[in-house]
Image 1 (cartoon, rainbow over the protein chains, first blue to last red):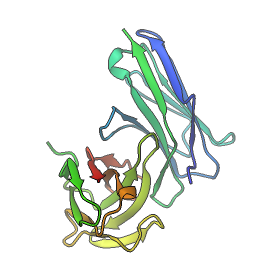
Image 2: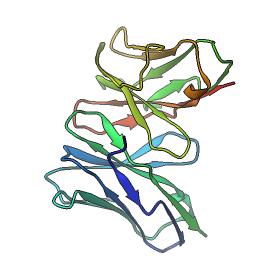
Image 3: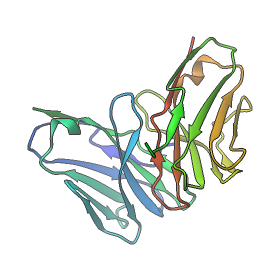
Image 4: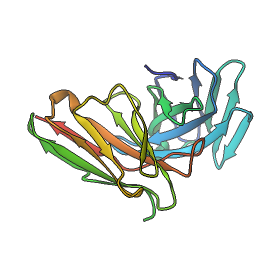
Length: 110
Length: 113
């Protein structure tokens, strides 16, 4: 069964706009990882945030984690057409097995 | 390229045939994972290794599936007597150890006719 649920399921924006994707999960986690997947390809690791962290940045990406609400968000600032992809959150329940959500499909129009 | 590699990238087979996929992890990574992804879904965990030891197998991994990592380096995933329901993307990942980032390969797309 899927532990994480991303919201929204799909998001369409113009280049230059910010994109925010949310992930909710059900049980306590060790860490949460965000991935990007271009159509039909493998997953690219974006950011890992641990349960004792609240925010992490990497370039145009900002990830927050609220363990009290069991939720995380991924913000992509100043989006580009190349950011078009599916984005997944994956939780590690201290078992080292990642449990993925169903993803958010992001479309960035030039 | 020092990332995770998988071969073949695509495999088309007839129902009932056996197939084998290979994964080469990042060289210093001692953990290796297999996941399966069907269209429109996120990946689902199948099994993982610490060096050559297989630590856990998902209920998704029926008796027709077997995975090995004989020397603690590359791994193979074999599916015997393939069924149409086995059609999916098979993804391999590796990491330095528990709780660390898992880096994925490009996947092997299996189509069972």
